Amino acid sequence: MPIELSQEVRSALEHGRAVVALESTLICHGFPRPENLAVGQALEAAVRAAGAVPATIAILKGKVRVGLGQLAMGALAGEEGVAKCTVRDLPAVLASGKSGATTVAATMHIATLAGIRVFATGGIGGVHRGGEASLDVSADLPQLARSPVVVVCAGAKSVLDLPRTMEVLETQGVPVIGYRTSELPSFYSPHSGLRLQHRADDVAQLAAIARAHHDLRLPGGMLVCQPVAAEFALDGAVVDDWIRAALAEAELEGVHGPAVTPFLLRRLEKLSGGRTLRANRALAIANAKLAGELAVALAASGG
Ligand code: PSU
Ligand code: MN
Image 1: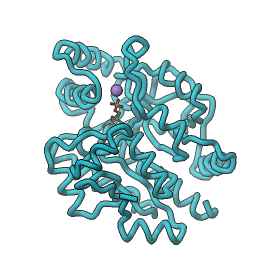
Image 2 (image 1 turned 60 degrees about the horizontal axis):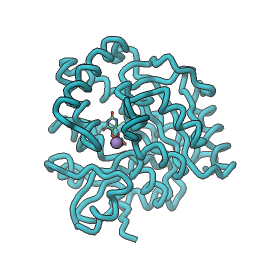
Image 3 (image 1 turned 30 degrees about the vertical axis):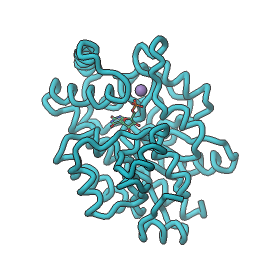
Image 4 (image 1 turned 180 degrees about the vertical axis):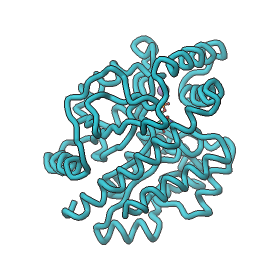
């Protein structure tokens, strides 16, 4: 198999220790350089501080890498034009011998191959606004129905159509658990107005749900949604105005397909004077920490 585990990740998995997968699209397309490297490193540090081993996943020179050293992460973060790889892109990018950043969907698939069961990210992809006509629905959603990984996120951004995103998750049988909330967070804001059926209020409760999910042998994953911390949260109505402006620009410039999410993130950063970036960073780090704590709790109980 063209998949290389770092020594540290391999050894942790062999000994049943806690490991947390991290994605690389967030590094290559979610944050601008040079801050992206600092974010990638901060996510790994947060996982370590919780007592787990971080496994950042990316394609480097045609190889799937699970666990990047400092050098590899630095090279990836500094490289321009790294391909954004969702599942359908993996075969061609691997065969080309080039590098690629993995989205939530691609990272979930690779984490499962490697035997990793907990994954932290910022926000998942979902049904785009107008998706009922364009059919622009992120591959993250069907992948959540296929790969048995717990994904810790801050919900999905309100650039998406959140009610339809929740409908697809329900249809696909993906459990969605609010962490200390009964409302779906909308990434920059803790609120969306959408109620969640299930919540956990501490890591032990979360681990109990994850264990039950695993024991049931459900074919897919589970989503844990943690709201952004209050001091970084942005007002939902204000963000919505920025989003509408950013979407209008995307339309005007004819941006579509995989370029949409990175384009909107850059525009929101400009429109908010950097506030969306700070919120994004804070929520991703908090998710890495929670994923680390969850992985430690699961490892302590033998999975
Ligand atoms: N959400 C963010 N930042 C990101 C992404 C999502 O706030 O960088 C990335 C994730 O890797 C996610 C992908 O899997 O965008 C979804 O892209 P698309 O909508 O093209 O499927
Ligand atoms: Mn898309």
